[in-house]
Each structure stands twice: as structure tokens, then as C-alpha cells.
Length: 127
Image 1 (spheres, helix red, strand yellow):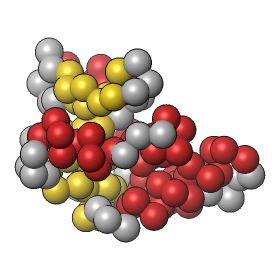
Image 2: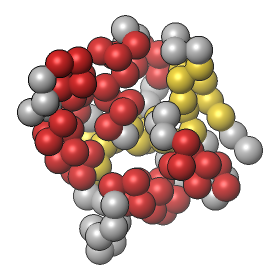
Image 3: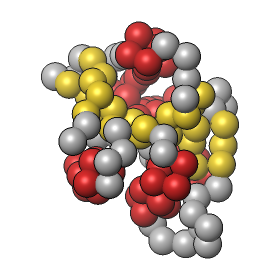
């Protein structure tokens, strides 16, 4: 099963001290982590910052190396969020995100979302 991760998902380990891959394994069993090239670009930009967010983004880039990197939409245009929604809809894969806009858009389309619960664990959301 393909699981699409967004930038904030890849930053969760530093921000919330959780092992995202272990959490996903416990929820799903076997899975294939996928990340859009736009998410990698977004993390690269964020990684230049100092402080906790920069450190989280740098760690997110390291975690991104453990994922299959794919291009976004057919045209690769629009925001990274729009590309994620398009990719997840087209490929019927679940998405790990804490972004409310992305989460709601995916749930409206019947796509499963994995999100943080109580800043401790991941949970599967479906509508």
C-alpha cells in the first residue's frame, strides 16, 4: 500500500518525538512511503532556517531518502498541496498530513488520511 507523506509528516519526528515509520507500520503493516518532489523542494527551502523548524526540515529530508520520490500532478502545476490531493486521488493512496485544508479535501474525496492524535500517535481518519 502506498502512503503519501507531506512535509509536516516528515517533520513530525523532530517536532513530536515520534518515529513516523514505526507508527505507520503499527497502523498498517507493510507500506510503501511516497513523497512528491515538490515536498522535497519545500523541505529544502525550510531546511535553511535556523532553530527547531530548520532542524525538523533537515531531518525530514533524511527521512525523504527512505521514500519513493514521485512527480506531482499531470502538469506538475499548482501548489504542493493541490499536487498531493491530485496524486492521492489519482492513485487511491492514503496521505499522512496534519494540514486541515488537505485533510478535509482528501476526506471529501473519500481518500483516507493519517493524522496526529494528541501530539503522540498517528490515527487513521476516514469519512
